[in-house]
Amino acid sequence: MLAPAFVEHLMGLPAGWVTDLSLPRTAQLRALGNGVVPQQAAYAVALLLADLAALLATDEHAGHGREANAA
Image 1 (cartoon, rainbow, N blue to C red):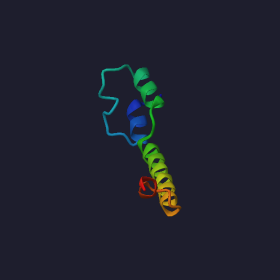
Image 2: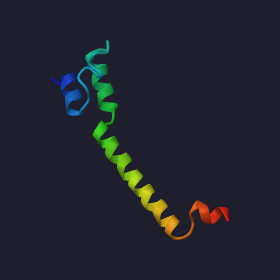
Image 3: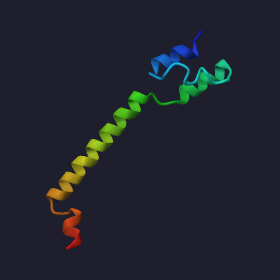
């Protein structure tokens, strides 16, 4: 039988993040199963920020920065 505390641990969540709530076991597992692993979300945000930085650098290099548009 799958224990919600084990799923919490595997997802990298703090102990009790879901299991300290007064929810039945099935509801805890559903909440954990519908959640996003924090490390995956952090990696996705880092990739998006890197893409944004590269895009902004390309725009500024091409003369399309705010300074060029303001003139």
